Image (cartoon, rainbow, N blue to C red):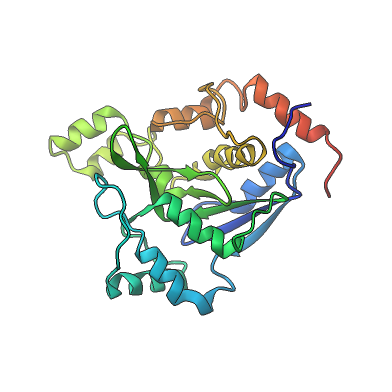
Length: 268
């Protein structure tokens, strides 16, 4: 039996933020349950029940935008127009994204306050699927990088990050710098990277949802095996391979962990 550093959660809570387009969250929940026997619950809009606090929440979000990725975030006072924008997107789940990048750790802190009320609840594995883009500071590159996911309490998974964060084929960027229209490049490299509205997104995010559960159990969501769905991909090619075209879903070590979860007495 594998040694879990935290209890196996009694339930997986799945929240939504914004327009998730083709993402089927129920299918993700069913996948996790089938693989682990841990039940799930669809919680819907993360802001449900918090509408009376919109002004305060909007103020916090407006203050954590990364305006220059090459400079470390420094707290400042947002403009009223920025706060108004945040109010609109919180009220309207169909509000379209405009390419904003948020400081990831602080974004996670705001969502944690909304869901967990500043309490650590290891009995619940909480995952938020969002259309917003967040990033973390890279000390080596000394700049912010957009991320697909940020694991913790709660876990954040971004469908915008899934499209924008992993690098596309090198030829895409070379031709883009040479002036080739992006629309042409999207057609030329179609299928080689994930794009908005891509019907593969739900299947791909099954692996990221499982990474969130592994973080909850072990504090480490990743695997070094590029064929395992827990592989920490940095290129679109790696994402597609590990999530769709690997030799197996999970490497032997992590498959054994999942078997241990299945062998446990049912939590239902």
